[in-house]
Image (cartoon, rainbow, N blue to C red; front, top):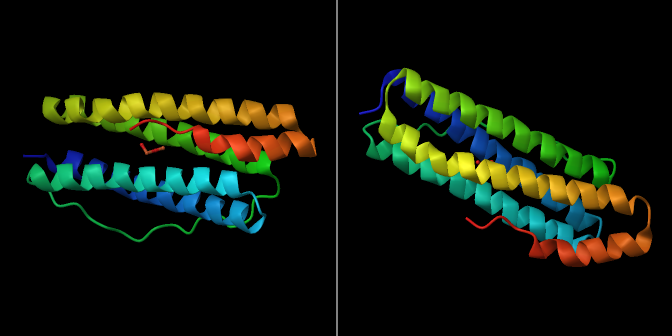
Length: 165
Ligand code: OFO
C-alpha cells in the first residue's frame, strides 16, 4: 500500500510526464509546419514515449492501492524561434524531469517504500539516456548553425536517434 505522501508525489510525476508528452507534441507540430519532417517524426515519437512513461506510473499507483489522478495540464509553448532554441528547451526539460525523478526517489527512501524505490530505477536509467540523447542532438544542432545543407542532413538522420525503452 502506498503512503499518502508517496501517492501524492507519484501523482505529481504522472502530471509531469503527461505535460512532457504535450511539450514534445507541440514541438512536433512546430517542426512539421516548418517542413522539418524528420525532426517532427522524432518529436512525435518522443511524445509517445512520455505518454508511455505516464501510463506506467498510472498503472503502478492503481496496482499498489493508490488512485492515479488525471489532472489538468499546462499548455505548452507553440512557438520556438529557432531549431536550436527548441532543442535547448528539450534538453532543459529533460534536466527538470530528472530532478523531479530524483526527488521522487528521495521520498521513497523517507517513506521506506523499497518496492517503489525499485520500480523507479527504470526511470532513473531512462533519464540518463534521455539526457545523453538530448545533449547529443543539441551538440549536433549547434555544430550545424545556419548551414542549410547541414540542416537538411540533420533532418534526414535525426529519426534514427531514439531512446530504447
Ligand atoms: Fe523524458 O521524461 Fe519521461 O521520464
